[in-house]
Length: 525
Ligand code: FAD
Image (cartoon, rainbow, N blue to C red):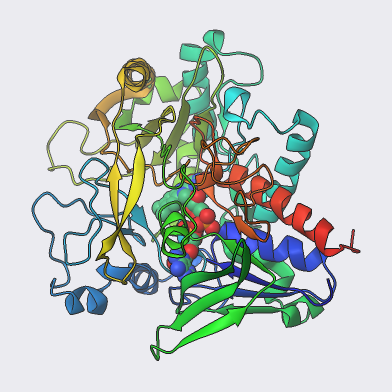
């Protein structure tokens, strides 16, 4: 096909991976990327964590909050800052789907479900943890060799570094204490280690966090010829994917600044608009496979905060080491991060993913005078991420008769943990108690977060090997029965996982994009 046009819905890391791979591999292709939210930073899709000024950073986060951003929220009759009873607050930069106003989704059993609406998507706000899937987390119908190569490609696209902050003596001391407690129980290669993160270590020891900007790479570099084949349209909502029978012909889009609607013809459409809004858009467009929106999974999360014990830490680190750690954190006071450790998922011993982040203050206020309100060695925030085993009945469904705040068929999320999850949560909580004791004293006891808190929503666009009603897309991410309609994102992950999913989803996107490139007549390497 000569001069193919590819329309991409959503500018997060996954839509960006499609744009990059397709433009690098298909000569004369043109990519138009549509993003419902505003551009937050001068460089499109940059992580807001890189913004040094606290006020600017807060403004960028507010702008990403769709219906919960000030003016938008007020137009719905909800004064800014209002939190209605029973309502959870979303993580900064995100907005709840069930926000309690008119046109809000219904998500009583999944109350913390949230999204980000901005150039770069949630990838402008993410923590950048990028572990690789292992054991049964991997997709059974993709061969190991191919999978390993895809993960390497995804790491490059996301600028993943495995040893960020590895020089931190505080991080090392925490690792040593955790290793004393758990090392003997963990399989080789899956012990206590540093957490791989997406970002570029800087000469001063800080990290420039990766967002969709690094994935887009040359596409947003005006010196690169590829930038002339790429167009990003912010504040442009894709209303429908248009079809002629089982072929996609393009998308109908609304310019949110003017309210004008237009049709954009495309040879291929890739929908990468998150795990709730992608299936919603397909539903609204009349693409309704049986599994659409079903098999919803995420990670049940148990979190806690521990005051580090001076004597225990003192076995492995000195006061000077602590000073160096604090100095690094002071470089970005509005978003300090350093010394991130983890214990990865492994089977059968450890079907959990554990993150341990050092912090000099607790994430919640502590009354002066309460025990450990001042703790010279600081604290760690520890979280266990667990599996949710896929079931058809855990689902987002759509109602044609009830429009949401944007006029799409409204969402209802139904979700429940079963005995299987409850038992893994109990095992993980017991381990979290052991970890806490190994490091110091709990100042926040382990607690299970409300459903939806992980922000790692998977399964609603499941990929599968055969079209047997339990998947939405084939193994190259093409919606069954629609060869030029692709889907992307965590929603494609068909397995029960515990690890942060973005790296895996970028790997799946690379595979889908290469297949399309091959069919379009790729000539670039
Ligand atoms: P998104 O990044 O969600 O982007 C989708 C985009 O589509 C959005 O910008 C949205 O506005 C747009 N869109 C939706 N509908 C339409 C439409 N109809 N028309 C046009 N545009 C539309 N993951 C990890 O792996 N590790 C982590 O450490 C981690 N930490 C996180 C921390 C936070 C605070 C948050 C918010 C997320 C975190 N995540 C993490 C999740 C990670 O950000 C997501 O996995 C990733 O961004 C998914 O990429 P995506 O491109 O599929 O979707």
